[in-house]
Length: 172
Image 1: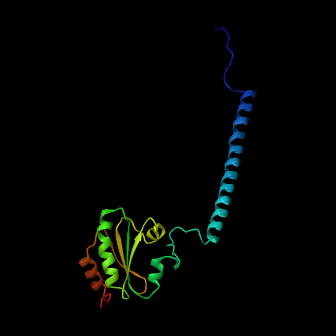
Image 2: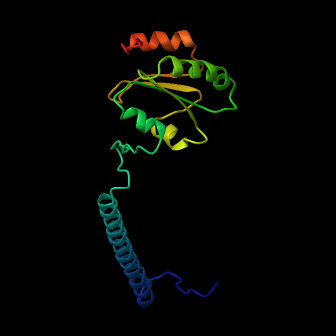
């Protein structure tokens, strides 16, 4: 207790401690600034590459799909005749119920309206392109290939014919 040694950081030792801490934040600031600049440069390069690549969808821009006549729907849509496309699958019960109705309508309306039954297993890309969420989905297109109406679920023969008339698609 008789020993009165000063344990505070005064004098020469305090200057060494303070010099070390004052230098530390300056170095960290430089490192952070360099990292921020590098990140900005990388983001700029990536953004420029995305803009120059036409296959990359841009946020907020609706991607248009080119019409490729390598499938029945695109061929029908470019034929100049109205089209009824039914997206379904052979295993779903409402799809099975609609199959004979659509087959009958296809024969009845031949030459005036294209009636297509598209299995989503075989034409998944078309289903995605046209935003099919559930099956069956019926999409009615006018003679110019523009979507006029969409229905999800089972649709009876009478409902289909009524919708065609409502859309002023000639049945005779």
